Image (tube, rainbow, N blue to C red; front, side, top):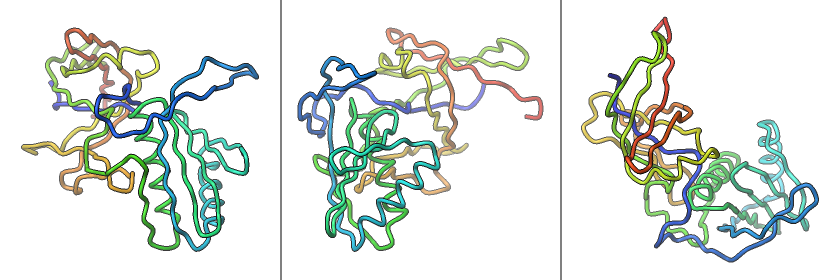
Length: 239
């Protein structure tokens, strides 16, 4: 019937009680030159000491542009549109200030992880990143849900539909959150281990021998009241 499946989505839920992000209020957003209804955004910032912050920022922009990320300049700062949120870089003598904004906890965590991982990758020297409102305690991501496989059915000879059960699935019923990442633990692992929030904002992965395989899929149907998710899998002839 296939292996057990557990996943977290690429986007996150609304802020849960007790979360540590700072809600600093609302700011207007614009689309097509017209002001949209004010929306609340979550913000976290880090000031990173660097010998040459301008060089690092330029290298990061060049890399992200190669991967289709768009940028704009606002009040002397460089702003990256990362889909579910924005990453803003401001260069000052000896310091690179990074500001991440998103609509909810899960998106904020994901965008912050993207920014932090690239900054560490391109920094020419060891650096320390400490984000405001974040203790880096190794918690699971806000948009993570652990599921268990409960049934499987062949829709066609080459299409199998798997049904998973789990809790707190209402947010996945949105058409905006149908694309998910499935994390499949290695065979024979008694207790699965999952990606977690690293102290510097990057994703903290389990050791290779316990690291789950990552796959991307689209949800077919969600039944939040029953706690069920259906995902279709194509069965390739070559296995």
